[in-house]
Image (tube, rainbow, N blue to C red; front, side, top):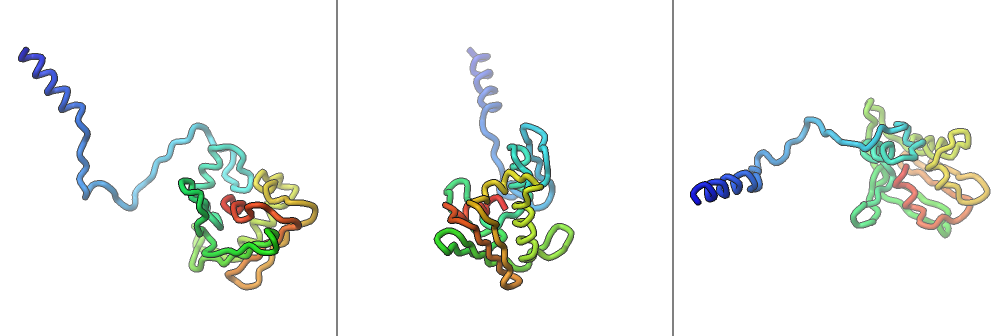
Length: 167
């Protein structure tokens, strides 16, 4: 009987949850290791078509508008605000100021325009670009100011702002 109690006590000690002190719970800096189910096929965010590459794109690249995966609400990303007009044909972005790429160069409206134009290039065969094709005609990108980008589609696009969770 004594052995049974000793075994139960020992088992309880082994199975109890570990207590984490508040001061050791989190630290800034260091490295984050992330496990993927497979090798990514590309690191080019415009050519992403499978889960591993999409995970890399989502974790490392900025998007104009981020969709909260828990609430499905749209949240600011690289754009601090946006407005859809012309019955879902046009979206105007006001870009966040002070952003820089990893090499230190500033993030500009020209970068957004270049990305959208590259996305729409038929020679690229971008799966993401397919989502942006909404009828006959071209997607037009204008830069009315250094912090504003206007994207106009040839036809109305349902849920237009949700497309920009990919760009």
